[in-house]
Length: 355
Image (cartoon, rainbow, N blue to C red; front, side):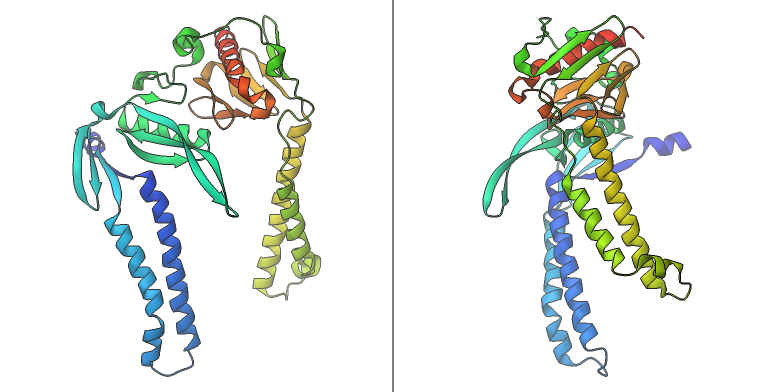
């Protein structure tokens, strides 16, 4: 019975466009609810419900109604029946097409340039989309998040995955590492020539370890975000104005005041801790250490034998089925990072076979 129930699982996935629109519509609805709450609060002292109250709430009701209308009429979704292995694309609840999952696969991850606007100026930013049968189901600004979503979807649907490196991995190969699959399958253009100094890196290879170092200077393209320090300062200043020690040690203090001070103290410690962590990583050597056990970069590591993909996206991403190690583009010359990625693939595949 349990197995039969598991086979008849039906799941619904909103498209990336619908999800993005839903966030905007939710904000509009919240504004409408807030407007109505404000009007009602202003008339709490009056008896009954004067007709003008209903009139004043009309704009809020219009915002809520408009958000609901656009949500219901513009909602695109893919409904998947894992029992029959079929997927149905519907718009506003009306099916437009139905296909078998084996016909839809593999799940693809694609990079799309989007024009953004800030302070009246436009700029381009890369968005990573998880696509099934030309329908984008997820859209992420980071490749790490997009790959995780695509991998999860491929496992749920039991179909293949085509990540950004272009290599199609069948469902049975989702966990296949670079070492197990051999480098030639992932990188037919492999180049065994030494890395040129123009790449901004040097490679030192030993039988049991390889070290890829950045020659781009002390920081290696990675600096602590000063905004974390600013946030810690602002939260700490707000907490100090409320006499932290006195408030937290006084049993007669107002519970709400104690809660507010506690939140400010925790926010200060969290922001300061984040800044110190990033500062600590920034002073570590800008080098990728690769041995049969792990691939490590500035305090973070992934298992060498589990690496399934190395690709240049919003960063140089060294991916395993569960984790992703990110190396900033400033680690090497950005226009030559494809050569560095090729070399990382080769070395990781070789060291992974030694384990």
